[in-house]
Image (cartoon, rainbow, N blue to C red; front, top):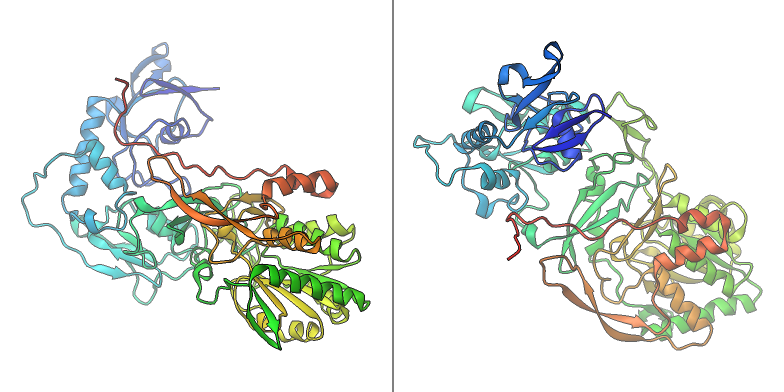
Length: 582
């Protein structure tokens, strides 16, 4: 395999890679602004210039200055075998310092109030390559703050003209709303008249911007980024299975950002997913168990709610009626298996089926010349549920037969004497057909949000959203991906798996109570851990990894779940200062 030496480090590379790509692949730091793996290469920020020597075949392969010894952009220069590159030579460093001085000439000192502070490449490079004082004595060019669309503000005087946003709108969604206006130091980014930034991938320009020019309206002035903790997770509202970061602090989510996965979502996420987490902190969240007393739902302690649920289900069985379990496609596979196991323990002939799977439109692929399934395509799924395929897999594993689809399940619910109804949808989802089908049954509702179906329940048990628990989703391409809990459960809510454990214990006549325990959450290097008091049930703690292993041992068709490992949850922090041993 050919090799190249970058800053005295020998690196192997694939033919066709640029020097910067090779450096990034081997962890060799070369500064850059305009380059991005998914976009075209304009080589215009010029901070990645480096000195290059290459073997000269006309001179017995001896190393000679490449292109006469002038500095070359590493982002657009293709690596060749035997090259020697120095981005840390005096000549290269002098260029880096000059570029930083030019970029900061008109840049305002907004760091104390800028949302990008703490994750700004201009700050980082200014620290590494900038001067301690400005030599510029003229009047700075001032540019206005601009409203680019429903999600994005442009603070134009912070822009360094890297053009990542321009190239993104042209090359990925293909809508081209953003362009460069004027020339020289008057050049600025703007949208065209009557064409705001409204494509469904629009907020990705915020992630692409290396400085504080493009900012998220939803996140603006809400939290300093150095207070945020990051937990790797999976898209909770569509079948795409996009890899995401949940960024949170003190038990509250502040934003979602895309997590790079070149096979599934590449570097992107839709605005739908990015801003679709608000239901986690909705004022419609269920936080306390309820049971029907004298015809009305009233708050209940947990043991009495469990007792009422088990009594109602067994009463239906004594009357010769079946138990039906409706498994929502919003649940994780492990929770579905725990609930299905519970249902079969309460009624060995229990009806188990899949809940409604919402859809909207058709699948769409980006860039526009791609189709779903093409290599390098980013697909926006029409199916608005993260785990319909995983739930079907679990039902087939438990019952040994194909999962009953929702439309086929509705008539069977009319004949059931008791129904366990799960939801976890981000909005109102119960239809009149469903409410009519369960009107004569004893209904146990397990859900996160209040709705018409909770009003129809005889026992209501509050559950948690995907951000408050761990589990596994199977996306539209059949890829199984696990995720971990980011924030503690809200109020008295518990995961569906934990509720299944405690209901099973109650059915066996075992006491179910919570014993207070201190659980440390959001622990990261260099941070003071946050401790949260959580109730640990006497019925045990639902651990998704243990249930995945159990599923794989019990059912051959569920073995792929047992082989699924969670993403790495610890974020590696790299200090700016060099640490030396004393």
